[in-house]
Image (cartoon, rainbow, N blue to C red; front, side, top):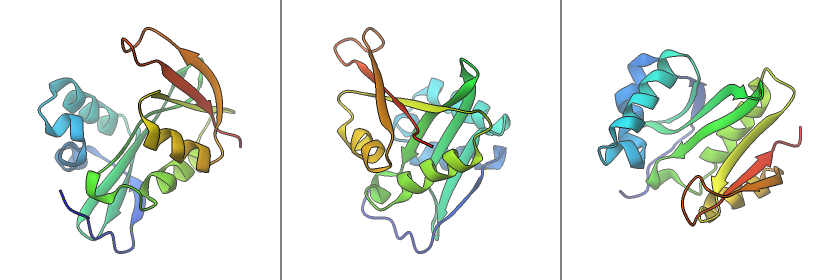
Length: 147
């Protein structure tokens, strides 16, 4: 997929009508992962998804849940391959920070996911822990939003 024309993009709450469009930009779901597709459907149904939308449709989405010790947790941050590195992820993180309903907001990413680590570092998130055993040979790094 080539670069996507973002134009000005807006961030809004997703609903169930967005499911198929979000599946289309999610690299895991688009490859046929039924579990991811079901998660996207559930997240949209429960009102947990914020979507970034450009002139051609959705270019990214973010899911925040409150099941991590009753604190906020960015469960998923996905940017369409053609829109990466253009501010979409940063804008979705900012939206998650502004709209959180718990004192703290966390997220995590695999050690192998260098682009996400760079995004979190640029956004000022602090590394707070490392967990082995979720994905064999690829530990999970946990981060805390500074605000």
